[in-house]
Image (cartoon, rainbow, N blue to C red; front, side, top):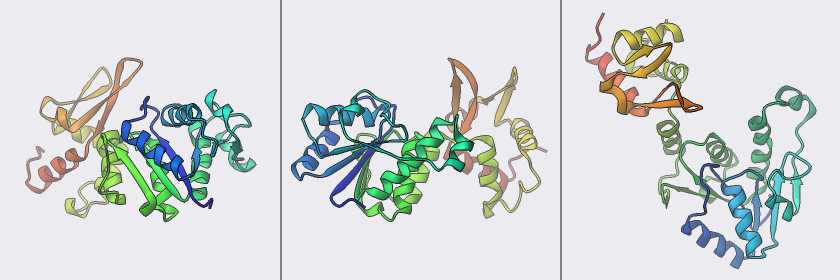
Length: 254
């Protein structure tokens, strides 16, 4: 671990540094903290630009490449994180999975962390989980929805991620299979049978091989799009409560 160091990361979707984050970075510079950043777009890139603009030198960029991916990352010293050959063989074409090794290394190296999260990016979610695993949850600040989270428990982080990113039908089924409140109702279900169940119970409907929420449940699901077209749905936390309630109160139609 690098003493007096802070790992700053966040969602690619966030293109500007919030004022509160700028204030935090200013305080880090005042205390001459060693700042660790990745080489992705979004918060990584914007943080590096701000530090370069302020002529702050106590910075290191982490990358799985020999040269950082962003132009601004090339302005700072680089720490290359090498992926073991046997692992690289399996993920050679999977860029996101390669980044996991870099992110895990930064979680190990830092003393403190600042995460700027949109609530749904898997990369930042995984960083937070890595920090918890490294026993640094008490030294991690998480900025979400224009403020710092007061409840940074792992349960709350999981809830926020599930609420914003949603559950796939397979994740939802697995979750329900483990829930004692529904008394093994779904034990014999596979994904195909579960989709049919959701259609039969008028939770979802199928149009041209794509599933959509029925009107009553539109607010319980997230419409997925690909290249501007609907590609499917994911389920929010509230839908889990809805389906459990339907089972317990015998609202289902058979």
